[in-house]
Length: 412
Image (cartoon, rainbow, N blue to C red):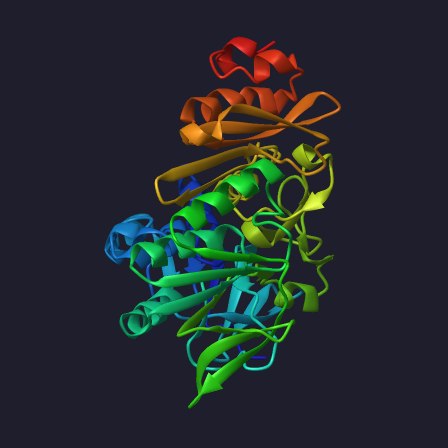
């Protein structure tokens, strides 16, 4: 068999936050071997969160979203393999095959491929004007069509859907959000936060329809013109954006025998069941102590960066298990939501502050102990609540609900 086109001591597949951080952390750990960072996109590694926010709004140029300047990578002897992608993996031979047929060998592999946006499967899903939000190319296609669009339908009331709705409303578009659940953010937040954001979006002119089923997309001359709902009603649309989650991009690993399903399973050092293969970020299915030990995937920059550090340190001979407290953020209008901890499984909610003031927090408890906080324009609560969520502190409800009492003073 012919030799692979190249062999690297560490090959990193995926150049998002996790992949870029892994390469950088390896060098910070004094790893002297060869490193290659492979991306399916033609761009230098860039930040993803601004895509549905400042980049879509036209407030941020792409060059300002680069994770590092162009010279950073060659200065650290990190090879960038751009616009190339892995379609299969041979763990015994320690090599991957790319879409163009080339083969690349590795000593150790870090899989940081993230996920692909879940696409609509209903009739009409392939019409022009139907979009997802995941990469720069997705937003660029939306931006090309926006000048001619007056109405936008967003399918999905999660963070991506609501952030996109906020920006399109700001750009003067008529926006309707369709959500199958009985409230927005149902997967990630409690009812008080959901109702607050529903009210906020409606006050800004966004129409939100809950408990609806999308039956089909209807077109005209090959382009989407309306969304047909399960009750037979039609919602006119010049553009449709689906924000219905992602599918972990792990098929090559699973095909090669790695354990997994909804993601690829990893241990506390981000090692998969395949020898010398690690996985990090959105696609890594790991036992998380802040989820009661349940195996979960975390779709956040924090998780990607921290797991990247875990894998890089292990490879560099400095093993430190992954035990990071999850945190997230979202920006919609003038509202900055910061979340710390995981609220899954909570049995009680304590409201801290008045939502009408547009600065408040929602604290989630289980059996009297703090699991997580959602902080809206309440940076101090977010910063000070980290310690409480980390230790699952037990705090008297009357003090927890009193916004005049600092969370820092409640640490035990």
